[in-house]
Image (cartoon, rainbow, N blue to C red; front, side, top):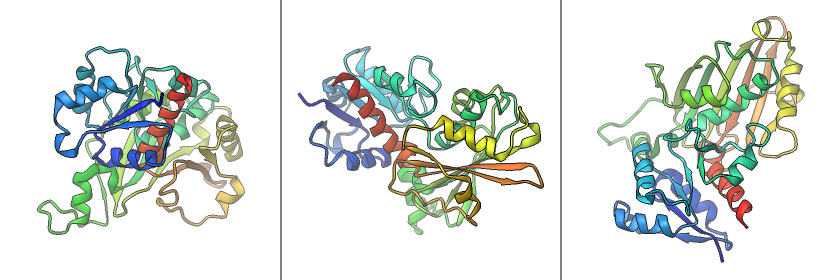
Length: 312
């Protein structure tokens, strides 16, 4: 029998992207409810219990409610794309390339927390260096990032695309999270293996999809007196043997004069760059991804396939 998949919240931004990715799949039985019934909890509960695997594309409270509707059922496996369970030790963190054995943990898990888009880029740059003993766990990490406005969901899309909306946003680019309490910081710290919370400065640009995440470092403050080549080698070794996270060769990075956050729109991969300045002893680590690809829906489908592969 084909595994039954239910996307709870299929009419939202992430859910629609997942439906698009699954549209041509003949190996799955996609369960659905009409958009007009999306708040019909009896119908949702029925689909949640009927599904072999449910993907929750809901706000945090909606995800918690879906788990309550499952009422302790151990038969339905769950991928939660919200923030609600990303630091919960009972859930596998759904970044398959994060560390050795993570893909297997996801494959065997009943509960998987899909990573945030910003943390996917940040953790990919930070964790390999911590594991290699290069980046001290107490280093004062700074993460600077810009995302396409689709990351804000339907509400922000309307604000950016409808100039007649009462709360329309006209700025070409804006910084937010000014109180330095962004909800993605805990997962960056936990899964980045950091002892100190990173200083995270997110922003949004006037483009629908795409993302750049930056982690600047002072080489003199790192362990083992690394060179930029050492940093690059540690990243390349960490992500060897797979094709989802690609570490761009140093020569190719050096030849660049700019990075476009929309370079990987429509792709479910991520590229990592190491930029350096020999005179100043500085490096800037950069991740480029589609915030709705490897940063959300693409990762959810990847995790789904891992989980189904463990069953079938």
